[in-house]
Structure formats: C-alpha cells, structure tokens
Length: 340
Image 1 (cartoon, rainbow, N blue to C red):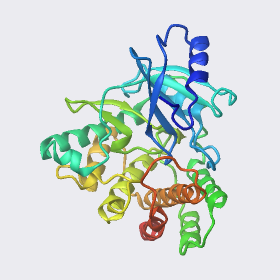
Image 2: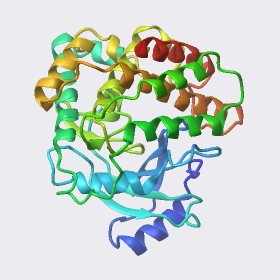
Image 3: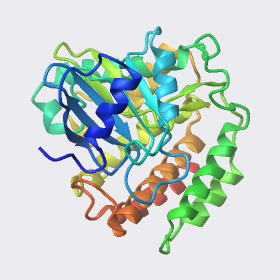
C-alpha cells in the first residue's frame, strides 16, 4: 500500500520508535480520514494497535490556524478533567520528519455525526440525548480551571474579542483574492459594537457535533479538532455552535460537504434550547449574543474563504469543495443582521 498524501509512513515509524519505543509493533499502514478542509487526520495501524496522526493541510495555510502544539497541549492538559479527550502519545515539531509538524494520539471509538441522515437513523429521542450531552460537554469545558491544569499561558484572555476581530481580519487579508460585498461593512460593524467580555475560560474555537465522537450508548467519548483553542470569552463557542446551526438550516450545507447539516435532524435541540441548557449548566448569562453571533459568522466566512483560496490553488485533499466560494455571501449577510 502506498503512503497517503502528506504522510511518509517510513519516516513516521522511525520517529515513533525513537520517541515512544514499543508503541508500534509492526509495519504501518494508513488512510486519510479527514482531508484538506482543516488539519489532515490519518488513521494509522500496525496491524495490532490503532493510532491517529494529525498534521496541517497542504499548501497555503492561514497563519496560526493549524498549530499542532496547541492541539496537543490542550488535550494533554484536559486528560484529568471531565472533558473527554484522546490520550496524547507524542508531538513532533521538526518539519524534516514528514514535511510539517504533527502529533500522534490514541484512536478513540465513536462517531462524529455530521449528517442529519445519520442522526435520523437513530431516532428523535437519541438525537435529542446526544445534542443535550454536546451542550453539557461544552459547559464542562468552560468550567475547567485552566490555571489548575497548567494552561495559564495558553492564551491572553484580556481583550480577547478585539484580538479575535483583528486576527480574523488579518487571516482574511492573507487569503482574499476577490471582492466580497458587505464584508468591510461587517468588519466595521463588529468593531463599533465590541462588548464587555463575559469572563475567561478555555475556548474550543470550533465546537460542533461533528467535532465530537459519540459511542453506541450515545455518550461523548472525545472532543476533537482543538486547532483554534485558546483562553477567552466562552460565549464565542456558544455563538459559533448556533452559527453552524443557522448555516445548516438556511440551505448552505445541502450544496456542499464542507459543513454539517446535522442540526436539521428531528430531535436536535433548537437554538433556544441550546442557549437555555447551556445557561443552566454553565451558570452564565447568554441573553446578549448579537456581537458574538456576528463574530461567529465573520469567522466562518473567513475560514471558508481560506478553504476556497486553497482549493482554487489546487492545495486541498479529498472531496466536497466545489461551490464553497458561494457560501461566503450568506454568512456575511447573517453576520451583519446579527449585529444590527
């Protein structure tokens, strides 16, 4: 079997033997299980044990958006908490090994439910239970004392919202290759309505159902995809979860595989139910989310524009990218509406 694109299995095996002796028992084989849209995720096996390897996407990459050490650090720190994460084995920041930084972690059993059809097969009651646990898991994350788990230096919570706006504006500049009507007005509107922040917690940065693994008993077994995690305003996670739901319900997800349409499934909590359950579990006031929703739609627009840019340059891996550029305008419109 040939090596999957972006992963030199021979070099990986040599490195694993040096860093974690005894972890691999035989020759490695691998397959790409997530490609191109985000960090690349590979399922690797030696015929006896299974692992997961994560590395940045190929080609043009948004600055800081695919930091391997960030994912590795936060999941290692969360291991003793109530937030389910895979076991971390080793991190490599030497790009000479496979051509980029990467890390190796435990392969956890579970399903990342991204499609409504998969949830519909489970039935309305199970879907509701799964999405309730999704919200409870987010509240559990925001309850973690980040200093107590060694993450005091993981981010700078003061001024987080303003930095997020500047960061995503900078990211946009790095992959903006066409006119985006309404985008400048959205940025100006966000800058003019910057609110007081609602405390600091660990922020996942891309929390949604298909970034969780759920087992056959409908329990959350792992939270994945921590590449945008930091310390900051927890309401940004809540708003992004709602923004993904809004995007799926307005038809964008039916046109492409890039985003989830899971929120369309019968039994999936409504936005109001998500807000109410989170507020109760986390003990936080979530009655004023206009700015946070606007920022969430802006962030999604920038991320998808970056993917559109990479796809146009031929640097994406896997399927599901055709038409992604058409998804940006509705996100800009939704962001402008949210902050009005």
